[in-house]
Length: 185
Image (cartoon, rainbow, N blue to C red; front, side, top):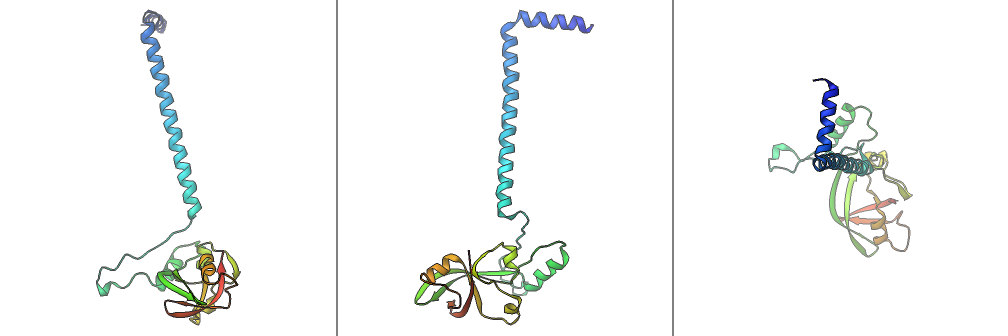
């Protein structure tokens, strides 16, 4: 059959079955609209997720040791030399900062507060994008000489020293005394 005959036959069937033709056209329109709207919702969710991950630091990688299995030969997690090895092996790193976390009581000037204590190196300031409100962060000399210095978070500094500047003060953390050298924003 020629295309002209097929076109005439199709038009004749469309005009002969108006309700069926209208319902078919509506089905196609609604089907396309549903696919387009679902694609838009999916794309919006993808962009929102990427935005939230970007706010967390899409360029940050955190390595954590698995909990100990009770085997003493397995060791106790990651060590400082592991962080140094990562820095040597992975190119273009901005910062590598090993850390240990512990929830310990903090006391100073007759006040006490619970604190999440982070033992780390000076590179942690760049790695975690921390800003200071006063004082300084840890220095390489602090780590090298194993000085007992601390940088307090803003909420802990406000809880322990509500009336004044905490720099230069001493804080007991888990029974050990530390000199406060800075306060985070």
